[in-house]
Image (cartoon, rainbow, N blue to C red):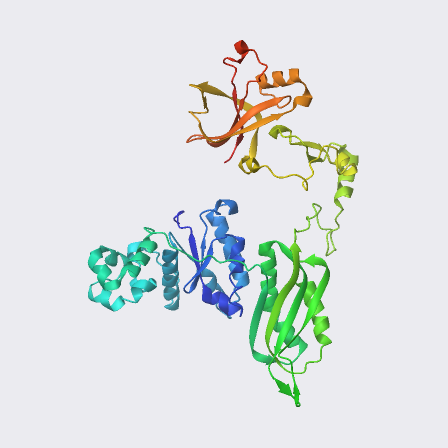
Length: 480
């Protein structure tokens, strides 16, 4: 498998058959990559930037196959065929062409699909070339490579510049503009039943695709629903001489935000059972009236007890108290944020027992006050255990070669409360405590990549004879 083949294609028909709501059948793919697009008759995903986050392409494909099998409900006897309908390519057009080639081979009863080179792909696998298949056949062209071998000027006059541009996009010569799939800001979906529903059970059954779409939308946006509205359209305008309103509906509210649909289905079933159906229903509409940001509840770290359906879990504070009583107060550590601008002193590990007894210790930053420093966007994700002294040649810091300063300086003066003498000793030894008078930079070279370094600034009251040659450079963070 070519590791560069980062485009993946699935047949959109398999998804549309499993759900009558065309807009929501592809939302599941946004969990894996933000670059998802519907191109002609296929769903495509670009994975070059997210493969590493999923543990590599092999692990990602395994997860994708599982998710595709869950959202695609195939016809009886076609499960294995639909799961195998997945193709990869270096570009979106290549992945789509290979998918079409696989579909044709499966229709002909061939289980193994020969994934030939790009030049050997047939003309009919690319829609832009298929439209000119008669002309190209007379010119002796059967594959993409045959078309590219023809003189470009004459081919452009016969086929048009648009066809050649698509061919260049398929080969990766030109970028391909795509309309990426986006989640709507508000959830409101309609479902045309295609048949009249006469009872509450029939309406609830018809609402299942809408509820699944709502759950996918909530999970993708990390929200939970507090209130939703289900509306239905009457199939008849008049019954027994009485005019009917075109739409009717009900609202559901929950005391706690939720992403699960089981509780909402139970509430809908209870309220729909109490409704008097005056006419058959031919269309449903589901709208999320009120949502809020939501994070999943932390899972218990204790095993499930035998013979019980629910885990016999402990509350967090009970678990900490039990371990602290058994192994000491320092057995469980928690990170405590501190009101300090020095990177190495912004947090510390402390006994969880002490932090639980004092949940808001003195000195903790208040996240609701003040403005964030724009420089924080350039802070590295990892700090070195101790600042590493760097060699200097020609006034340039060296780390396996000369470093090029990309951003900075960011001036930092903090730690004066630790004492002046202690700060001078810390500056000479690279210690993490004491007065910090530094200029921070983002630096780069081809060997170490992007790193976070700082220069110890010379204080204004330092004698001239001590200031000469006393500029020290240290590396403190890395980005990759």
